[in-house]
Length: 192
Image 1: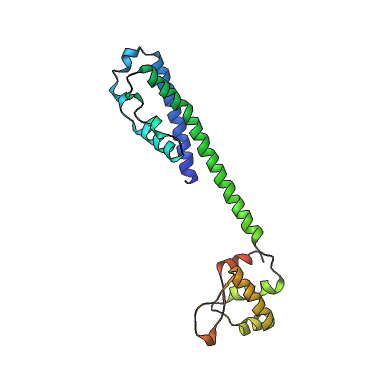
Image 2: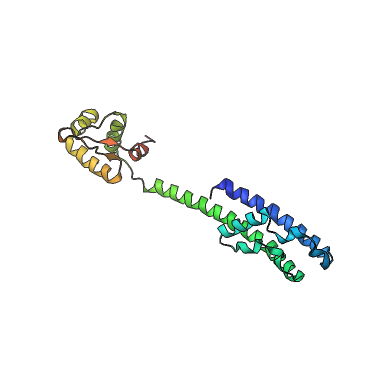
């Protein structure tokens, strides 16, 4: 659920809660015989259905918000209405807490990504920078000419980079097997 929808649901539930409190006060002040003369109370309104769906989607019983006044017992209807009024703040709290949890999980994942990124040494950085500047896959010899590093050093570093998914070997003829930098490889040198 995105943050905008969560905020919209919280605002809707807060407004719905106020309307339910007003309804409770109004019905409490009515003569019980007047209660049964309002046919609109016997139908589930669009707002009640929306509230029920939000409740269902957040692991609460949405049926509490559907057909509240189908009971002929006024006291039972008032008890159910009071349960609604008590349940809505719990749903709001659940949505708000879930939003905080999701933000925290995203923050933790982001910090783990940063922590798990290995420290690059100068020769590793020079290889990745060289590859990032090239338009086509490069052979070991071309990388050596561009960086001044030995073929053996390049082979060792490229094997490490393949394991980290910093470079990619595109399919091609055996005489022209080269490597190219991946998006992860570009991100690894973004700060250099």
